[in-house]
Image (cartoon, one colour):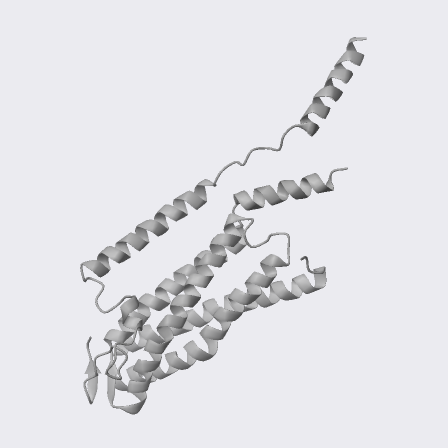
Length: 84
Length: 172
């Protein structure tokens, strides 16, 4: 009798679980959050370097032509290796 | 839209080939820049610029575009999806970012290669820029390769919802 009751109870519990609401979204994984923070720090460092002028000629502006037929680049020194 | 197993394997092979090829080509490009900077001989620097332009336009750019396009087809044609798992989404964003930077940067390489080919003058400073671009590109590609192999767990909210919807539909 006791075993029968236990079996019945287990069936009810299984049924309840089956019909229960879906599991809630577990949230963003830690590795995504950490990677996002690292990426943000890298971007901020890059922006700061550009603002204080430590990035040299590098940066998106380097790729944008600014007229003069040289695409924004300074002409090289003839007959030699130019150290820019 | 799910592909047949045969087609899926073919697309996956093409995706791995283009992605790993891109990685290898960037390493070769980096080797040219490092060699030219180390030797600092005018003829070597000129040769490096010309070789880097050819490698860039005829190897790296096609492989990068192929990697992005085939990667999207591969993701959408399998249960992984493009926006369902964080590792797929992060990999896609990084690949698109690297491709955009590559396409924006290649005209600069062409400019320096043109100057090197037509005159006796060469730039060394430009080569340092190449180290930054190629080094950054290599880092991004190593991250995407690692993501593909380890496939870290974690579903997006959209993926979670879709999975639940499919589970509900499959239930009698």
